Structures are given as structure tokens and as C-alpha cells.
Image 1 (cartoon, rainbow, N blue to C red):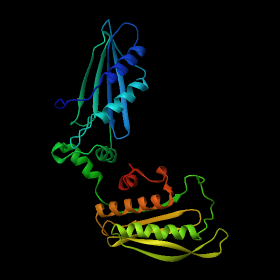
Image 2: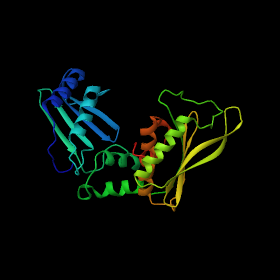
Image 3: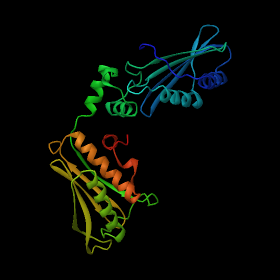
Image 4: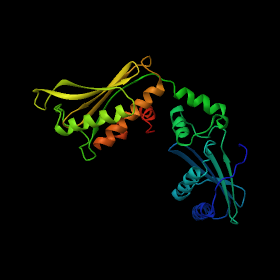
Length: 282
């Protein structure tokens, strides 16, 4: 494993892990080796018990309290700029001793993709000098900018999960007030925004006029339309229109302005993992 680092394994952590493992260990146990790997929100626990006769067996489950303690320990172990560990090896002995070893710098034992590792690095940032080459290469691959294309519905927290098939594109007085306020928020941050109207239909198919904001993103743009039942956020920005950092800054500012002004939000399940990463919601 990597060079040892101080890890804030408090007596409470030891007590929780030791007592819970002792409760589920079989008769005649000598020690239990707990292996726990975590990247971002995904954890992978396992435990092997050694019996008095020298035989070994896999524990059928790791107690949830042990998993929760290790998850909390990983967060507590974070050092700003230096990161936190990926793997924990904790051995509980029948005589009450507990030993622990942590991997801060080698690839984790569990299989992870570039997006998950990038989300972990965003949660626990590292300075370049503290970032292993394998981690830089993996995250760098996930952050290559290929453009973005989506159409998201933002709705009130108490809105039904599925809207009626006929969406009413009429702009309400409330929608107009939100459009003005969101435009002011974005302009105050230096983003180029212009208001316009467009043609749509009401729920019965009659032509109506609705309001929209056009937000500049380099040489591209995104639109935010204000309908009666939802705010429709449309993005179609090519990689050649702007760099990835410019897009991220603009997209996150737009989403934050919409949520701050209206209280309407984007359902987490509506976005893919790559889209959530661009929006800082991974």
C-alpha cells in the first residue's frame, strides 16, 4: 500500500467496528479481516474470518454499522489538497486488538470508471503534486470536452412526476417575473443573455406566445423557456463553440439562477452521469 499517513481513527470508530464484527463472527474465530474500497458514492465491503483451526471463510455480510463507520472515516481522513484513501484494510482480533492500513495513492481494488473517479476527485480535491499519474490520466480522459446536448424539464418540487402529454406553452405572470429575475442574475455575473418570445401551443393546441431567455455560451447558446407547467432548458452546444470550462461555468450558473429564483429544480434522475458531472451534481 502507499506510504503511511495519520488517519483519524477515533476510539468510537474502533469500538463500532470491533463490537459489530464480534457480534457476527462465528464461534472459534481468531480474527476478521475487513476490506473496504470506496470511490465517490460507491463502496465495496468484504470480510474474511480466520478460525482457530486455521481455516478461513467469507462472512456472508458486513454489518451496515461497520460500512457506515468506514464511510465516515474516509471523509474524516481527507486532507485538503492531499486527498483521502481508496482502500481500508481493518483487522479485528478476538482478543480485542484492531489494526488498520489505508491506501491513499494506488488504484482502488474495486472496478471504477473515469466518471466515478472524477466525481471522487471533485469531492476530495488533490493538488497536482499529490495526484498519482494513474489518477491524472483516468480523470483527464473523463474530462475531455465533446459538447453537450440536452432538454431538461425543471418543475416545482410538488409537481407530478409525469406531465400531461399536451404541455401548455403559455407564459404566466409568474413565469415572466422569473424570466426577468433570472436574466438579471446572469447578467450580473457577466453572462450574455437576451430575452425573446417564441410561438408555441396551449394544452388544447391553440397558438400562444411564450417567453424565453437565450444565454450565450462562447459561439453557441442555450435557451430557457417559461411555460405554464415547467421551465424548459434546452442545450445544444458543440465542442467547437466553446471550451469545456466555459460551458461548465455557464451551465452551472444558469441552473443555479433558475433554482434560486423559482425554487423549481432538475430531478437527479433526469440527467446522465456525464451531464451531472458537467453541472457539478455528480
